[in-house]
Image (tube, rainbow, N blue to C red; front, side, top):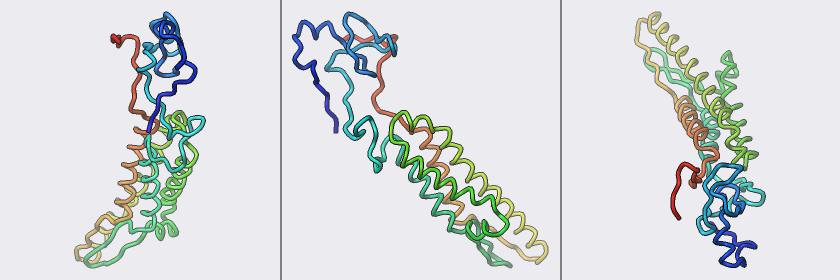
Length: 217
């Protein structure tokens, strides 16, 4: 839902409003100027101002449950990391039947797998605390790194399990197959969602015109 705030300008005489134009970004009025001196954007008529979104709340802050502006991808990535931590990394079939969750491996020798839930919790914290356009844009790189690290750790651990499966096959003289577990898939998909979040965080649909994109109103 959107609205165009009229404010004090709604009562201005038409002859004054005809000479007053507005910056589409900061919405400040200027008289007899072609562009905003602060942002370099082409000034527009009052009727052409982009609508103000009500879902941003007071002071431009979003409600905590808002999933727009890339926040939905952020929450989905965090959820997949946390859920995947309790699912199997891989499964062995054939001469040896075994599967272990990321949690069980982390409690053993694979301590680096703790990065997965830590990254998930960090993304949840960002989802809860970053609730403005500017703050979302500021953490794009952080979100990208928090998405890539868990996937890299799981991938390295999976290749280690694959090497172990080959060694078991040679010793047992029978084939030991290794398949990717649900936990690994969950982390990989979560990483993809996190990268999408890093791209989408703080994006808006309306794009203000710049001076070089001159148009006639």
